[in-house]
Image (cartoon, rainbow, N blue to C red; front, side, top):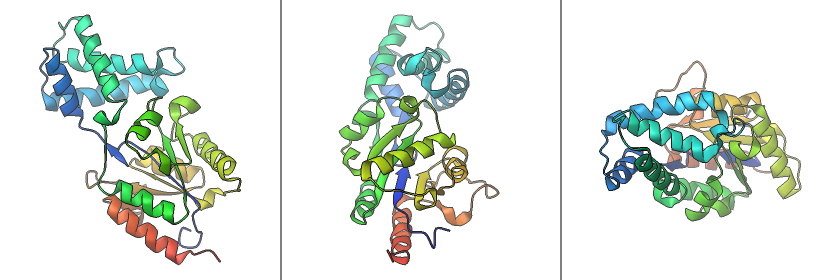
Length: 254
């Protein structure tokens, strides 16, 4: 389908797609400043398990359960450090959590993947409408501003502000509505492409909304070939940019 329909809207997931973080580095550094030591490999394992559990108990960063995103992340930080030392005083954990929450609300906690800026510039010059669809909390807008990439996007749609998260098809429907509102044009689902790094949330979520979808792998994961087409997976953003250049040349406006 993508060979014949010229895209008009391209949306991006953020974490693991356009932006990366050095989790172990930030947790270790901030913990050290407050007199705490943490084993990096244990940290990563603990973070992942706590994240998964809390995402089930308090979906969308606790938006609908009364926890709220700040306390959601504070709980993660407390649990991660307590997994290694259950006797850390709560006052110390609060200081560490506050520092990490602040860090991850600015460019200090994030870096663009190689090729991200060049890709966005390329698509913008080609006249594509660009947007963000991310399972993220309220900090995403200021993060993108701080990283100086917010101007590329017509809209930034987060699960926390919308109240639903990927792979719920309603968040993709909302993205189309925002695109049509901002550009005063009617974009069909088949004219939209979502780029992300997870099969279920990004790829299948977009496909179920009748969108086209692509996955970025950054050379890290083994993709389930029963769920995703091989030609829809890219190892880096430079390869993805070349794909879009070919696609847009092949599907020039009639």
